[in-house]
View 1 (cartoon, rainbow, N blue to C red):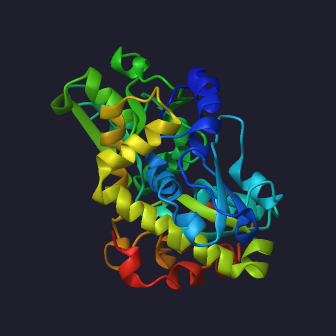
View 2: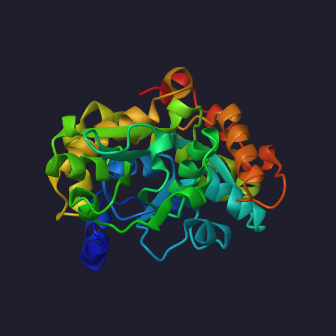
Length: 338
């Protein structure tokens, strides 16, 4: 992931790069739409950039603009208000939180089928089991990863106030330097950075699924009005996006080239690592047989019940209204499988 201090330079490059990725088609034949990402361009979003570069959206009748996310942009708000047509939001937690607040958004697909967050410590340190988190300094992001941490702690009967939980910054230096006992990482980003600075065999990881918890992340969303009034647009967007992701996984080096056209300052080795990990996250769980962007109803319900129990949402929500699997199910299985 790009550091926040690089955000402005990357944003200035995107407007030039994105416009040059596709061949123009008659505007009258295309329906304008936009996709708001959850962060700046990187291989986490490669399939969308590949689909745009290869003209898949235009072939489906969509003139798509890919808008980057950033530290002060809330994808759910932008989609709910109509500023963007489609959005890649945080995850099940952010969808539920938005619905809980009355934002009229609907999830039409889930990218990361398993939890992308892990908690990293040193093998030779004092933390051997999750019980050893007690009294230790643990850093995490309060944008979703904190819910994963709290869920794992709850499974082991540990209260959050038994730890020293602190907000995590962009840099992993505090962990590398030893001032933090446990650090949060995503498989595809921070874990790469940590391994580039410390031997991999010196690290110990704690994984949510080992504690019976799965929080799917990177949720595709639209406004309720779009889902109801423009269902064919939604289906067309998914068909084109899936083609882009299939191509990205078939030709990862080419996909990274496409991403780096939008963000030339990215580190290629890290982006190739990221795409490999993203493929694993996108094809795990029920997606292995049902295909990419599958909505796992059981995982959604489990996450909902957890968020309700621990006060992340204030009331039970209509899961069928929040997650509409009919759009992704309209795409043939062969076109969903990588």
